[in-house]
Picture 1 (tube, rainbow, N blue to C red):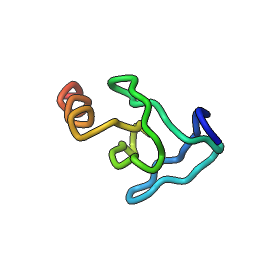
Picture 2: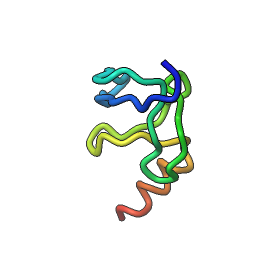
Picture 3: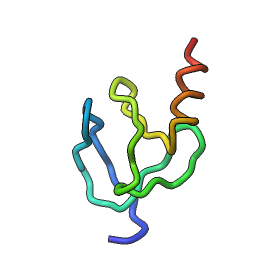
Picture 4: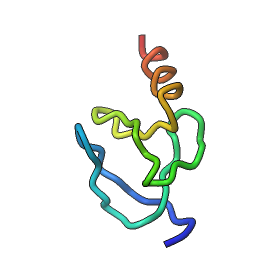
Length: 63
């Protein structure tokens, strides 16, 4: 399945695929994140992040 946006449920230590796809979009930068490279997300907000940089920016903007 190439170039299809996946729908995920973000869990504390993993994620569950709700709708098949090969990537998600970073909630901060808009960058494409392939599922096999996805390591940062927010369970409460149900958002993926491209890297720790975007995750930190999101956290920093909340304060």
